Length: 237
Length: 234
Image (tube, rainbow over all chains, first blue to last red; front, top):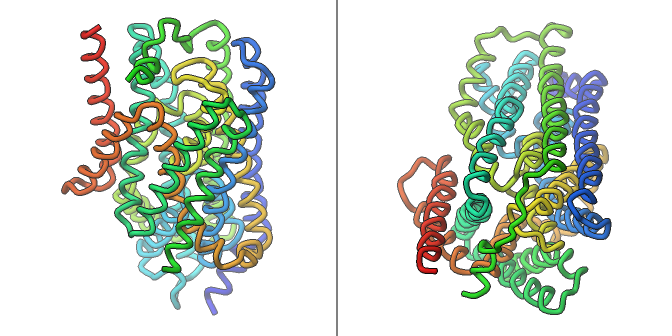
């Protein structure tokens, strides 16, 4: 009984309005950064063909991850309602983080998520926890990105090559860890990671050798599809 | 080996420092900070509305307890994530990535794929602009997909055939493996090192949240050391 009352508030129009505003900021920011990048591109000798190539590649490569995110989003809708899900998943914070945060918030109020005594006050505690918690990243990025940029400038001034090396090595380090973490999950996960990695290497090799630009744009997308399909087939074994 | 050297030893590596890039950076700082601060304010609107307009305020004690619980859970990442990902995201990428989220599973792969498609070497101006375009469009695609899924009341997800849904469960190993593969073809030695360091750290008794940071730091240190050895040999 109480839960349906909570859900009525959670799906009410003021919450939808706030969620729409959050979504608007995300869209606005993406468009403004596209605009300033497109403006800068010719000044640094990037052709409009390369701009389009970058956009197409980003779009193709983001489809797999976006639908992957969408599938887990569904689990959150039943817990915190549609508009709240939209505004939490639309910005920093993954479904897993938000679900845990929701649990922490409910516990802080002394109840269980979606339990019998999950009142509107309990729901409010959950919303406070998720929103304040997610703000940590936003605050840090808003306050310190400029300082990080200044440090980078100093490093580049001393040795430009070092920054390029650090940039690549940091990427490798992060993805080396993330990949190993996935691979130890199960045989299927390991197979998927290897299949996708090998596909990517093969496609990149062919695309670079023959200089096929559409293949370069599709390479991550194709690697994703091959990896995920093989993942599905391993579940049939 | 010859290929490996080319990556970092170009004599004419284009610095991402010039008047044009200065202008790009100052615009990025302006819009990035503005959008982040507005989002911070917007984030607080929902709880403030529930507490003080609807009058369902639970009291500050549970709210603080919730925040402390959250901070204990992932609070360390508020600082570690932006610092860890900054070298690869850059200024504009950090502003977009930390507003839109999904950095490792979407932003970074899309940025790297875009840079790869136009053949931009890391650390160049072209890489920065191309990467920003890749991340920005990924953020846009992601929010549109989420809007459709949420508005359709998860109808879109429910009509996905079962095999597709199973396959989507493997999106993480597929994307991480793919990105590693993309880099490994350029620098196979470093790709292998990163994977080995990752596995060793994964099985070490280290607090799990800082493992990725440690892996990044160690990989960077090893790669810098090898590059230094190579340079001194020449």
